[in-house]
Image 1 (cartoon, rainbow, N blue to C red):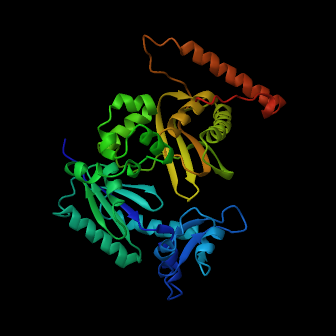
Image 2: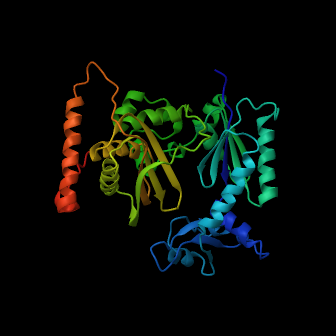
Image 3: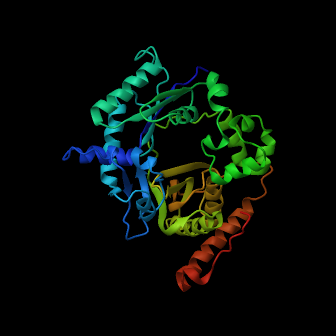
Amino acid sequence: MKDRLIFHIDVNNAYLSWTACELLKTSNVDIRKQVSVIAGDESKRHGVVLAKSPLAKKYGIVTGESIFSARKKYKNLCIYSPSHDIYKEYSNKLINYLSIYTPHLEQYSIDECFLDMSGMGHFFKDPIEFATKIKNEIKDKFGFTVNIGIGNNKLCAKIASDFEKPDKVHTLFKNEIESKLWVLPVEDLFMVGKKTKIKLKEMKINTIYDLAHTNKEKLILNFKSFGNTLYEYANGIDDTPVESEKPDLKGIGNSLTLPKDLEEIDDIKLKLLELSEQVGSRLRKDKKYACVITLYVKYSDFKTLTHQKRLKNPINTDEEIYQNVIILLKEIEIKPIRSLGIRLSMLVEEKFEQISLFNSNSGVNDNFENLQYTIDDLKSKYGKDIIKKAIRKDR
C-alpha cells in the first residue's frame, strides 16, 4: 500500500489572531503587538484568559488564569472579548480557501483541519515547498499565520505542526520517527494529558522513546484499551482516514454547560450518567436504536473535541449508552471541562445483533431493555427522581 500524504493546518493563536484581523478593519492597532489577552466576562465565571499575545506571554501570563491574576503581572493589560461569530467567519474563510486544493478535507476543530494530499503529485513536486506556498498565501490573503505539519498519517501531521511556532512548515515522516518523535518528552505525545503523564512517569516512562519500547501488554494492563493507543501513537501508527464528509447529524443529543469546570473523573462520570439517561429516554420515546455514539467535550480554554464510536449492535438503554460513552471518555485527555454532550445517531427502528454461537446474553439484554421501559413508565407517572442509578467508582 502506497504511503499517504497528510497536511495538518493549525492557525497560530487563532482567537487572538482572528480578533486582531477583525479590529484592523477599523483600526491601525494590531493587538498581537500589545500586551493583550482574549478573556471572558470578568463579572461571571468566564473571567479567565483564553488566548494571549506573545508580549503577554513574556510577562508570564498563561492561558486559563484569571484576569485578576493576569493584571497583577501587567497592570495595563489590554483585554478583548471573545466572539464566536468572528471565529466562525474566519474559520469558514480558511476552509473554503483550502478546499480548492483537495476535496479530501476534514475540519478537526474551529482552527485546525487535515488535508489528504495523497495522489496529488500533479499539483507539486515537493510537498514542503507546496505547504510553504499554502502557508504564505494564507498569511497574504487573510492576515493571520498558520503552521502546517506534514506526515504519512493524521497523527504525525498533527504532531509535526506543533514542533516550532509560528508560521512554520514541519515534517514527521516514518523515517523521521526516531530522530524527531522519540527524542521528545512523553507529555508531548498527542493524547497524553496531565494524569496520564504522571502515571507514565511512575512507570519510569519519561520520553516517547521509552513509551514506544514499553511492552504493549504492560501498557494495556495499566491503561486498558488506551494503552494500545499510547503504544501505537508513540510508534507513529495511525490509520484513521481524513473524513471529508460530515457525518449525518440526524439523531438525538443532549449537552450541558457546567456551573464550574470539572476535572475529577468521578464528577465527569456523574454528569455523563445524567446525560445518558436523558438521551436514552428520548431515544426510547421515539422507539429507536442508535448505531453511533458521540461524546462532545468543550474544555475551559474553549477548545472542543468530539470522539465517536460505531457500535457493533444498536443500543437504546441508559446502561449501554453510559458504558459506551465511558469507553470514549477513557480515550481522551482529561483537563478542565466546561461543557459535555452525548449524541446518538444512525438511528434505526429495529434491533439487530451480530449473532455468535457462543453469545448467551441475548435474552438477558432483552430483559434489561424491558426493565428500562418499565423504569421509563415509572418516571413518567411519578417523576424522574422516583428511581436513581448508583455510580460505581471503578467504572
